[in-house]
Image 1 (tube, one colour):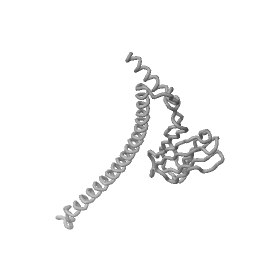
Image 2 (cartoon, rainbow, N blue to C red):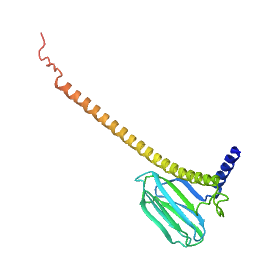
Image 3 (tube, helix red, strand yellow):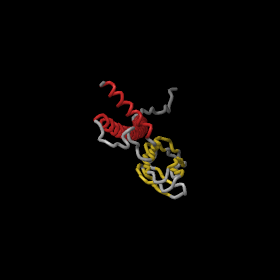
Image 4 (cartoon, rainbow, N blue to C red):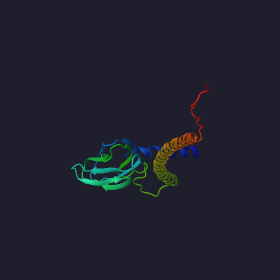
Length: 212
């Protein structure tokens, strides 16, 4: 009996993921480039756009969110990360554009998450006429905890990737600077040895007379 309850709980939790409507991806934005993503959103639907520049340059990017009638809903210039929630004023295709046109040589790695609509409740819990049972309350609490854990994991992965990239860049800079310093020290040392050697070198006088 206890095993059957656990199985029912697992089935409820797995089935809830079919109702989540979101677009989450990480892409590379080339220098002097502009990439746009499109999503059809119904009128009066709440949507949330979240982005973060993971690596590249000064960790900044231009972001523009346009409605189907080309109205600018949201705009950010040279921003590292942000989150914006809006209610769709029209039904149609909305565009989210990321621009790196101000950069001439630096590529960017950008994370984007577009959530459309509110997350659907667990099956059988949307319209509950009576008080939820202990099993249903536990399933709802576990579902919310799993959603929170997934969000935390995503943000920690982004921070880990950003920190690793910065550490690699710092390591490269330290390596090349140390190599240049080593070459400079060896060059100066060899030059000093050659100069001192010339100071103390024995010069033999030329033989002016020969014995007859």
